[in-house]
Image (cartoon, rainbow, N blue to C red; front, side, top):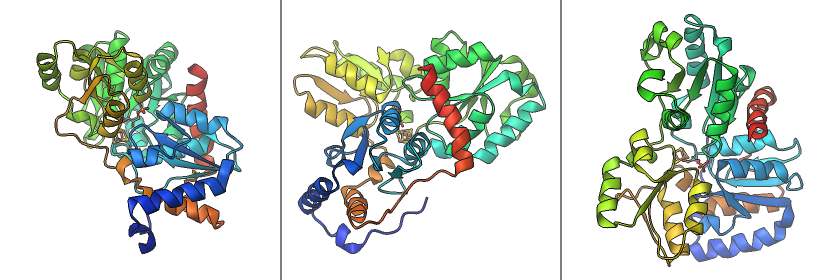
Length: 363
Ligand code: 13P
Ligand code: SF4
């Protein structure tokens, strides 16, 4: 994912000049362009979004707006890929900064996944394993899942998708986020200690054994999100000691210990909805990315809303979408040039679409 350096004339612009120019070009481009903003984007980006949401909502919005010729996706690379797979041939998906990836998605590549599948085939009948990939994965992995009878999931529909998978096969191969897989399966009654194993792509045979692959129900890929790995049970205990009325809500990319110590968990959209619907005076300790938590706190001054992690840490890849990049892609569009198009190869897109559409049909 190569990002060419921005021309100097953009990098030198002040925040005010940048905002003025985005406003002007946005008006000029009109309904030809739809700007989508993930909840983790900074305020200076979110203010321009026609829609904001979690991964599922944004993928659905992209699919529901065929009239928008250009979709400027202010999020990370895997999200723009999903939007490209789900939109029409005529639509163009643009990621303002091509280096906005996802460290979790980078923890699984298609070669490693194919090798793992081949290893598992030496131990068991892989036609009885249903592969499920979190959307935080490359299009090639979504395609692998699509051609092997599986589906994608997001943090808001993982439960329904995993139930669907467990009805269809004897085993589940969940990638790349071990935590979303473990948390969701545990909530469905699968014992994390007795019925799940971890597949480490950097060790021979995943660091496990053929016997374990044969006997266990769930095989979790050893991937995680570095932002959500920062949340701990200790932070939750401290928040409860400081604010006796606090309610704790976390994202399911946090560890099992954190999710079990919290009062609630769910996708970014779920967190937003629950906090918005809570009465004035509520106190919330939140375990997710700081840009989103700070915005929730600013938008609802009648509540106490804080991030559980005192060393507030943004998702550094989401943060790469700076307003200068947004202005640059929009002004290029105005000049008739498409820069930073995210285009999945047709043969990969066809199989990835199967996995994404199965997910959309389940939920
Ligand atoms: P959501 O689908 O909940 O927005 O999660 C996406 C993500 O990357 C969270 O880290
Ligand atoms: Fe990826 Fe984590 Fe950032 Fe979400 S918060 S985009 S999982 S690195």
